Image 1 (cartoon, rainbow, N blue to C red):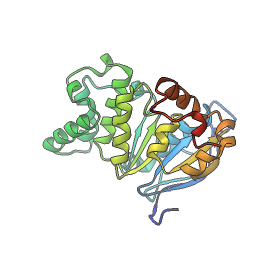
Image 2: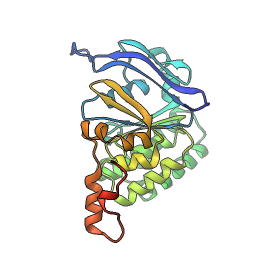
Image 3: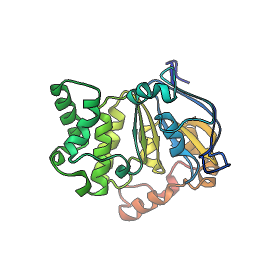
Length: 264
């Protein structure tokens, strides 16, 4: 565990949606320290996005506590939580609503009551980071799925959150922009939590992995330990070796045989 102080503390959290008697989250406990990059993995329906919504102040626990930067998440602390946490949804259409891309990025900055020059500079910087500066005058609803994803990420990055939560960030991105995003994630010093099934991307960007199954955190371990636990990967449908096989078939001279992949 890092010597840095915890910035996310989740303790004994249970949660059920109002229309259901079944808990979606069941006794969740973990901490994330300042500057850590943590992956959240698991099969569909495990509760990953629901947990992310608790960290972003969208949902609140039925019981237990969520502390963000030392402050308990609740209706009275929403302003603080949403200033500290930047949450990028899996579906960018759930996040984008302004007439143009530029206004989308500016919206959160203007709500922070920053000066016009700061708003302008941060908008340009985040657009450049996500390679969308040429889209600033375009309506977001006319963009492709991958472009919308990059706009949503840029809008959150512009606010300089202490904690960045990305839900399936590489969904709809082409390989070139996957690399842009991966390089960007690695360049950020803030705390990062990344929800994804794209294990090769997680291996490049995260040091630690939380495995969620049926609303519970079943495993909390370093990335390298997870890579070597073949049974854990296969049991939860997270085997990524088919991608290695595809690469090896296309370019056998550039990629090692799948028999050399370091999963026993």
